[in-house]
Figure: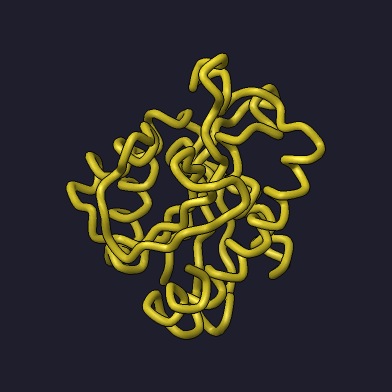
Length: 185
């Protein structure tokens, strides 16, 4: 069983922000495979289904970004999911807007949601998909940048990245992270 986690913030005021592209990606994946994300457990919304002959849980922690790891750990422990079967999807300001990067293992970088996940899992050895949102110019605060509403031009670019990230998850499930990295990085 795989645990596929999109990082984001739960309230409507955070919809259509850079910080929620993880949520957007798992929503896209769920839509593609007709999986409803409508169950509640461990301060999370989730759905279960089958993608490419693999059982999956698609998870959207509702703990806010900085505490996302708590929900991930609770699902990992309850369902006894191996670290290499946990896929985290999140925004990354250090990657050009619209690009995606897959990693098999690695640290959290500057992302507070990933810091929480790494802390709670006590490991960096799980796959992740980072969606580039670009970085702000010097005139805007980083927090404001990731939480501001996305304009139409950026939305178009990020929507394409979200579709590619959903396809990358499908590739991981079908052929493994190494092949997916070669195909999408």
